[in-house]
Length: 66
Image (cartoon, rainbow, N blue to C red):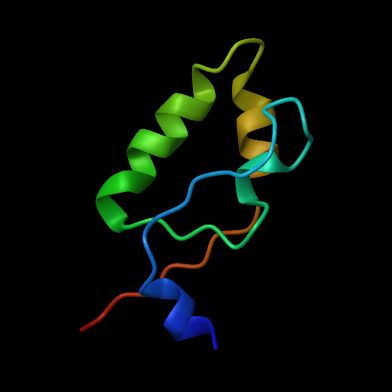
């Protein structure tokens, strides 16, 4: 199920950058340290604007092991 997928290696995207929702397509899994890097990389992508980045990050699931 869901938790099993979290144990896989991290995936940021599997679509072309010009696809509207490429950033969160394909059940991406990011480790906490990789999230800020992924957001910065996306913000610096050619033609990207801050509001476009925010629009694509509207779904985020954070699982924390206590």
